Image 1: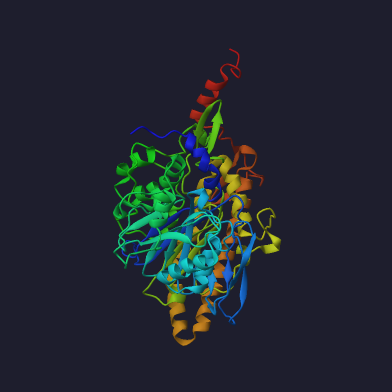
Image 2: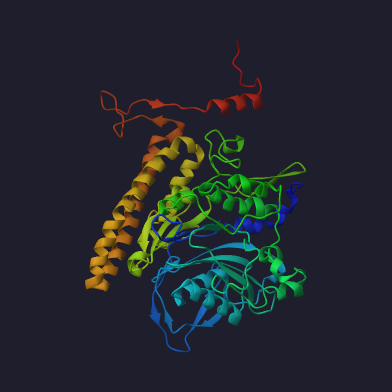
Length: 545
């Protein structure tokens, strides 16, 4: 099949830049510890990375709450409050229920600008009002049916300790209340992912245990002229989010990379990513081995390294092989259009998490939201237990910090500060980041069993003390990570200041015999970059004979 041209990509470039998130999914029988695992990166250039908290509460009948669009803060309207709401920390509630998302946009004419519930509000309302994934699907779909759905097409990951569901939803157009949607359960022995492109194609309408959908999901598509075949051939993705270059290369490629990491089917699916076939990847696949929570953390740091889409080896990576590209994703040179790859890890992340949910443990202990601010590649995932009811100061809007207000007490800004130093000379500096990152994450991983054992003993005697213990541990690990990363930033700016590298010995900056700083190393540019440099400049800088 003829490959797609890039011209169609520009139509979706704005959406992809604004709503460029990734969800990775691991069923409980595919995980190393029997947990369900899901990840989420909130990738937006306008998002401040913080840890949200909604306390549990009992509310009087007739209480109303205001709804503001999550992305912009725009007031959308009022809805009735639930009588009972549950504690929510980040994107996980006290029953280990976790909800993530990626925006696929879909058909623009289906956005209902009169709706009250946007996708972000839908997530946090669902978490406050639900105990299980199935209940969350019911709550979320009923909310948009009653109040209208404000956003464009959305893929949600909805997970509890026993089940993981992918629900895809899109509105019905201006002034038409409700949404069309379908939800499919990911088999326990499989992995799945979505990354800003609708991924549900055909679904078994008779399998009530593993599939749910709005009654008009097919008939509405027929009415709008999006589908005219027989029901068994209906594809939600094809009807409501037709594939184009951007959806394939910017979005589905991230799913391909995840499948490529943990199965031997990468080469099988690569032609779809390259545009040689329109046969889509399956919604879920069985991994070749059990996958750990740390595996998923590392997968969230991916830039297609070692694959045909690797962006760290060509001229665009610069002399220090940075696996990042500046936005926008597409650009023009003369009258020709070009594009940059869009990997899982990206510089504009506000926050990231990997959620670990375990049915074998009490909820307060079993649910851990491994949370980090900024880009997954250069953050540290710290444990946030789902019973936590106090946000660590560094994960809050400390000192009035926001997306345009810097604070030395904000994790978002400290991690951005370090990352923006590393971007410029990636190969030279990333080793220092990796060493500190690995030390911290390994420490938390090694401590997990002991911390949870102590919490379990407390839980038997005094649940309140157990929750306070886990809340304090959550705050302590976040703050200690923040302090360590701040020291890392100070170390990096000293070691690499002014383009040189200061010498070290036994973990300390080296001094000479009289106690003065030792000489510096001048690494210069890599050989292949210098060769290209001379190729581009000719004899301009050639020394005379």
